[in-house]
Image (cartoon, rainbow, N blue to C red; front, side, top):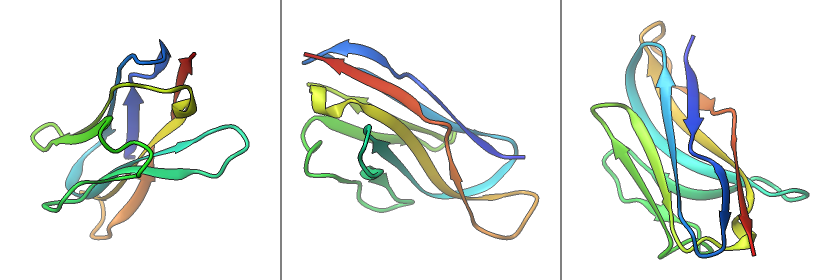
Length: 121
């Protein structure tokens, strides 16, 4: 059974930094895209940053220049470095991945459990 395990959320003052991590548990054959989403209270889930397999990373306009998405392919780990945080960045952050477990030939979509990021003013 594959799961995406996230860590790194917390409470930080405006202007501070946090680093989120996400890694799949279980046996993985291959990973395609890995992304970060977030959902603030009363709002829809939105895409924050994308790390495609072998492609160019992309960011939501609201986080460009402040957030950096990266992958450690050897460890199958996705990161989101968040700098210059603002109160409006407060949300539950979700890791998302399209990957192929060893147990199947299918590419499947997985979501992490979410990690809370709270930025105080």
